[in-house]
Picture 1 (tube, rainbow, N blue to C red):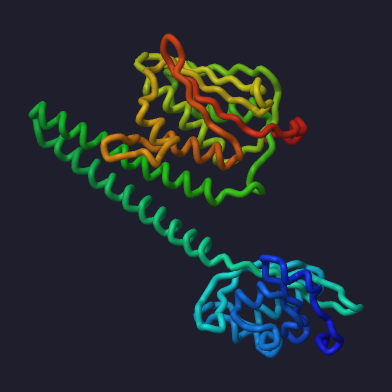
Picture 2 (tube, helix red, strand yellow):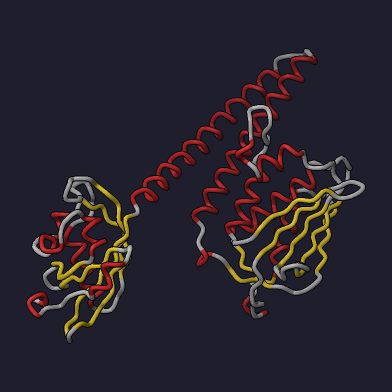
Length: 352
């Protein structure tokens, strides 16, 4: 065994806040470990070197010791591995860890270096949030459908103007709930989005695609695009959701029969980031909406935002490592600014 040849971790590894261990890929045993690795698993290194992998694998976890060994073999052959594992500590406590395995050559021998991080709090919080979003989205959609359906029945079976008005209000509120369900789904997708799922595009081309869809949805609106400079950005669903909400807000809240919206794109004069500005001629966005968006700790039962579109816009732009700003225009209107990191312009032949 490799351990018989005195393969040890440098003593400096004991100062790290990440667990490090060396594995014998053939035997599946630990050769040495640092203090953080000992702390996470709850065993001293001398005992860890005597334990089989199944000893510190939770019984309720569906993956087996054989899979762990397979990953050791793959990493020893030059194929690094990263995975989440359910660990049973020495004290019986179950925790979640992320493990990164990589090939190491020490004293002429091939072994596997395991980097271990305790991600229990993050992992469990993430899954609770994921369950919450799914339940919220599902329940919102179902309740909205029931409310809208019953409002339609009321409208069909009454001739009273006051009842008709009440039914219309109920239906509008039901539709708002349905919109909230859609917003929750969009936020879910943005949270799950990764940089590898984004595409490098010419900013104006990306804007034009979203504007084209909005123009089809709202043919009465007049939407113009002004390009001040060619700039590249990384886009995905988050960009589409944010710009779509900004355009829809500008259109549906207009008091004009033919809403006018302008979208400009160019470099921010202060930072050089890509600045996308959406302007309208609508009444100002209510202060409580912006307060709810930027200072949530000050929200009370009597002062809060009523919609989710602004939240979706903010989440989406921030997920792209950008910022969002709102401005009231004189004499009337709003300006919504997206600030995104500038990227190298893609080749015209690769534009999608």
